[in-house]
Image 1 (cartoon, rainbow, N blue to C red):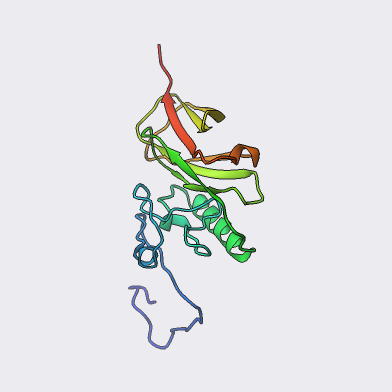
Image 2 (image 1 turned 60 degrees about the vertical axis):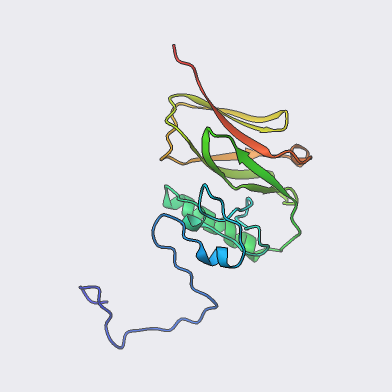
Length: 187
């Protein structure tokens, strides 16, 4: 490209590859995913994924802003590394458990947990649905509380990252993992 961002004749290069997918802009555009039957989350406008960023179509992964709008490039890089390592690894059968949130949150990603995965630490991203000065995040599975964490301030434009350790025993049963926020009362 020259200084006016115009192509310079004769400087092109061909790079052999199976597919090239460009992600430009913040709002996920997933027409390709939709066209091959990958279910999308209406809240994130990205694919529904497990903790390895594998979509509900086995062997197909999503990451970065094609998954959900990320605040930091570090999170984009992390999601790409997570998806890439999983895609390069062995593909085992999955047993997916839903991850849901109540109306106090805009969304939680991933939307599924693979009970068959050989790991305990899982990373979640979420956004509150309102400005909250002091709130407690509660993560439950059925009647069992898995985590309670206080936040001094939450805002919808600011994505939160949470690492949660989940044992195989905590993932037994069909109840979804449920995220909710409760605003702390102020005097």
